[in-house]
Amino acid sequence: MHSESEIRPLREEDIPAVLALSKKRIRHGFLDGKGLRDYLDSPLLKGLVLTGESVQGYLLYRVGVEEGEIDEIAIEETIEGTGSGARLLASCLALLAEEGKTCCLLEVREKNERARRLYEKTGFCPYRRRKAYYGEEDAICYRKELLK
Image 1 (cartoon, rainbow, N blue to C red):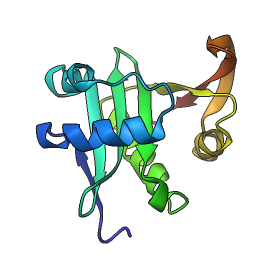
Image 2 (image 1 turned 90 degrees about the vertical axis):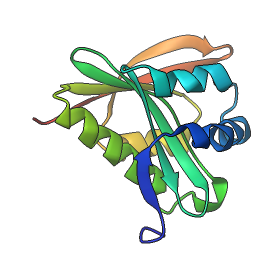
Image 3 (image 1 turned 30 degrees about the vertical axis):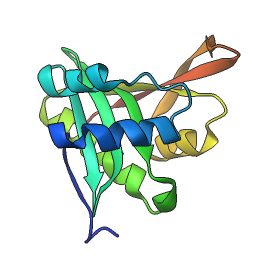
Image 4 (image 1 turned 45 degrees about the horizontal axis):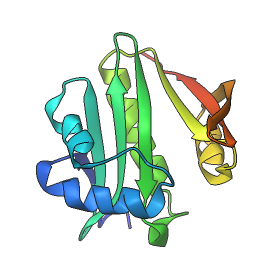
């Protein structure tokens, strides 16, 4: 899998595949074509894609003065459990550290145990709960300090 796939910045031609993957994998996702295009046009919004023969996953994030924040990450169901999500996450964290960011933030649905395990295994620590953030479901906010 790793030798056949690469992680690279989001490109214009990736938009249809990323939108389709978001629709398939993210319950109540926020993406539409215009919103995703913002990740190409803004210096503060960035995206990474995992590609093989097609887009197999993506990660969207934003950069602030001192921190980065992950907005959305999704992997094709057929490659879950292969370390692909961890590779995307590690790539994002490395880029943020290279840019001098001191930490990375994200939030996740409380019931998304697979994602929470990945984040905790990667060194993210929960620091806050947002009650009913996703309607009936709480969000768990995570933070990871980045080494310089």
